[in-house]
Length: 136
Image (cartoon, rainbow, N blue to C red; front, side, top):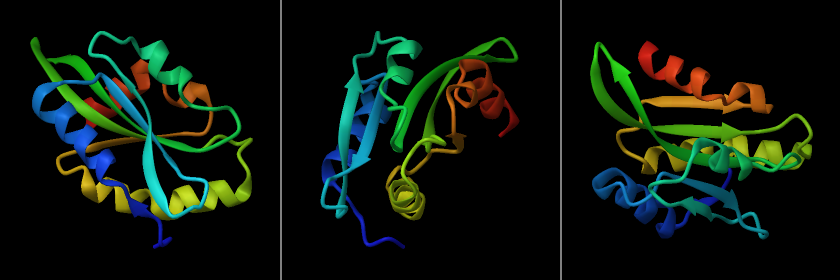
């Protein structure tokens, strides 16, 4: 436990995404005081995957949720996936704070069954994400 709290705005964004598909994605960051997880960016329902991936900085960690449309046994489905972005080039302190705060945020997002951790962009491709969904 890191002592970093989850801002109410994060939970509100997740609920709006889950219930009404208001957003395609959202990213979250730890504020400058290292006391709270806050929203960083949201994507409109028609946003594409490349836009989502572009929100992850090369040199700092982030959390993200993505509404993924996929097909399973010929049926169209969707699932919200949790992304933990911790690039190799991020400062050690940032990596530690984000890693120790991740579960606090995850617990607030009831119903997420799939998580992907990315240390570089090759870890968070759509093929990788859909592969993880289908393994659950």
